[in-house]
Image (cartoon, rainbow, N blue to C red; front, side, top):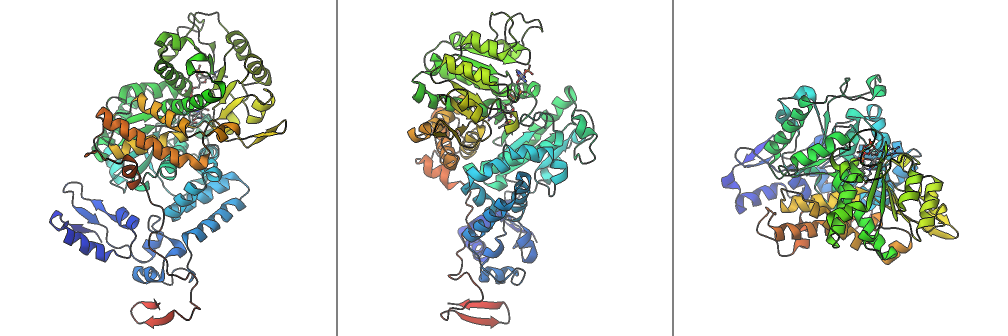
Length: 617
Ligand SMILES: NC(=O)C1=CN([C@@H]2O[C@H](COP(=O)(O)OP(=O)(O)OC[C@H]3O[C@@H](n4cnc5c(N)ncnc54)[C@H](OP(=O)(O)O)[C@@H]3O)[C@@H](O)[C@H]2O)C=CC1
Ligand SMILES: CC(=O)C(=O)O
Ligand SMILES: [Mg+2]
């Protein structure tokens, strides 16, 4: 049943009456049930979801944590075992369950099923166990989940828009049941982590990224929408795989593809307003830069692989300054890779050097990059370098071998974002250790199988002197009696906090400056103890604090620059940000006793005709 509450009734009296009807529902439940009529703005309440429907709704479900009163009122009494549990007790069971699986893909499936069953429990579990569970819902396991997506796909999460939907994208967006979407993560599946073109199976990435929006930054789940744009795939294996769940055709390029993305952008704004944040994720290189340039001044958008990655890498370099005692501009860089991640990092490093007082060209000159054809040099036999790569091309002879390049350039910082597994050979790592007292080496490629080197290889080949980070997590490494726990240089430190700040302040335009602010915030959260244990990043268990801090500083920046659209300006930005974050606790108090039926004589156990059983304390 749909009840429309007219604007005239949205008075205190009207809302109090509605409030009384919903008294037994928690604040989150009420929030998630409240919708607004698109034309009139009237509050629409879908009525009280009763009985089995209530339990089957993941946003409302609390499993055995429903109190007796709730079970009675909702008509679910008897539909579940008579035991009452706290959310903490449920979390313990979930941890036990997830840990008992040997295979990470089974852990992934368990968590996906929990997400579908009990949203608050899923987000509390993830949010309070980031170190254990982020590697499952995110890199590296999410990569495997995408590769096996056709097999493990169970229940829908997110929207699939295909090339055949041209002209109707707005209608498809209207099929999404949540009207208050504030953030979309969209992919076309062409470059999923370092695994290449996974087509529609790339959906695991927007789903995983948005899980982190909520778990790491408290963006409300109903405000998040994962989208995959399916324009085919060039993955031959998938094209012949009966399990593949996407369009079985070669990838579409050219004007028709561009028009589809244009239509998608316009439809998203028409449906959710011009403030809706659109995060581009894992598009192919040739599209990622084009779309960023095309849309960045027209929509509230950013490219995570270019800008988010840049920010987390610069955060690591800012923290590394405290060990090397060098400014960023005192360094010489070699990048393996000259794609989205590498160019994004190089560009932000240049900005950071400029803020240290280094002129633009001088800053660019400190950065040497290598792509699949070798060092970026002017007059390459393969032809002139185009676009962003051209900015970093040097007057130098052609060089193809990374080891030779390292010997020639003598960098203090070596960054890998190439998906070229094991490209940082022992010889290269040893050379870095020969040139530098404390070589800085980032192997940023994901998932773990694509890393340019492992943490162990980095420490062993540099006599433990390396300052290391990696895109996917590596466990601790013990070398010469010292144990190192390197940090994860992953954009997960950045995008959730940036998104939270953008959403709460209603920023329309996401500038590069915002990513520099985020980098500085993350770097400021790194303690001496973190550096001492070998990490340039705060522990994953502190990532939520970073996200909130980023959001607060992004808000401050937005109001200072006049780019916020949420008015009036809140005085206390921290309180303002926190007040809008998701609350994953079940906020209805449980009865004082959790076991049922009660054995304590202070509880009177009565039966009533209408509602079955009732506690009388
Ligand atoms: N840690 C993090 O937060 C992030 C990590 N990444 C990871 O970085 C990797 C690259 O991503 P992205 O930049 O978006 O991808 P792109 O495809 O945009 O770039 C890859 C770059 O690597 C170059 N390359 C590939 N193979 C080699 C090789 N053998 N030797 C030298 N260069 C090579 C390519 O050369 P060419 O230009 O000639 O094709 C290209 O410049 C992925 O594994 C991804 O998962 C990405 C984003 C965030
Ligand atoms: C982390 C990330 O965004 C990537 O590897 O693509
Ligand atoms: Mg990515």
